[in-house]
Image (tube, rainbow, N blue to C red; front, side, top):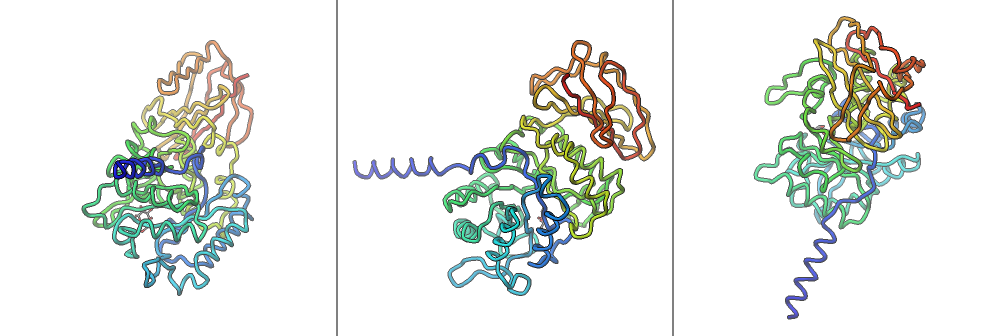
Length: 400
Ligand code: GLA
C-alpha cells in the first residue's frame, strides 16, 4: 500500500511537472540573435554592444526584447559537470552579461544543443539537461534556443521534452525555442514542449535560391517562405512556427529586406533580428522598427497569414487581425515591377481556419499602406498599383 502511494505521488509529481512555462510568448518572441552575422566570433563585448544598440536604435521601444547568444559561448564543464563559459571570450562570465542585459530592461537568451556537442563542436546538453537548466536559472537566462546537432539515436520529441522538464524543474521561466529544423515535424508535438519551433534548415542572407555548404544547404527568403506551406494551423498564441532568424541588414537590397520583413510579419513569425545592430543604415532601422508591420506580426489573435492567390510572380497573402481588421500583402517574387489590380468587391476571402470572411461587397474597409503610411482609399474601389521587383505592397484593411 505504501509503495502504491509513493508511486501515485511520483506519478502526480511527474504530471504536474510535465509542462512548459505558460504565458511567455502569447505573441511571437522578438529580439536579436548573434548567429546570422557574427557566428562563432561572439564575445561578451559584442553582446553588450548589441544590447546597447537595441536600445539606442529604437528597436527595444518597437518591441525587440531578447538578446540571445547563439553557438560558441561554451567553455568546458567544471569538475562537477556544470557548464562554464569560454574564459577567453567571456571573461566576466555569463551571469555578469545577463545582469548587464537585464539592466537595459531587456531579456537574456542563450543557446545549447540536444546532442553531445553543439553544431560548432562545443559541449552539448545530452545527459546534462537538468544540470544545464539549473546553471541557466542561476545565471538569469530567460530564453533557450536548443539545437539538434550530434543527436544520433535520440528521439526528437523525447529529447526536447527532457529539456523542457529540466527548465521547468529549475524554476525560472524560460522561452524554449526548438531548433530542430523541421526534421521530425515539430509542429505536430512542439506546442506542448516549447514556444517556437524552427520549420526549416538555416536561412541565408539572400532573397532567392540557396547556398550549398557541401553536406547541407541554407535557404534564401523565398525558399524558406515556400517551406511554410501547410503549417499555419499549428501556430497560435504561445506556440509559433519559426521560419528562422531574420537577415534584414545583412546584404540584401532594401526592397528585398522590406519583402522579408513583410512576409515574416504575415507569417506571425518570431522576429529575431540577425544583423549588426551597431552599424545599421537608416533603411535597416526603418524596416526593423516599422510599428505598423510589427503590429501585424504581434496581433493578439496570433493567426498566421495564408497565401490567397498566386499568379506568375505575384502572390497575394491575407492575415486576419483583431477587431475585424485584415492585413494584405502583395509579394512580387520577380526582379521586374509588376502591375496589379485587385477588385475587393469581386473577391471573397474565406479563411476556414479562423472562420473569418472578408466580404468587401457587404462591408467596406479603409486601406492604409503600411510602408508609406498613406491612406489608400477604401475597398469600395478596385486597387490598382505597381509592385516593384522583389518587394511588396502591404496594406491594413481597417473595419470602418
Ligand atoms: C544550427 C542552427 C543555426 C545556428 C547554428 C550554430 O545550424 O540551425 O541557427 O544556431 O547551428 O552552430
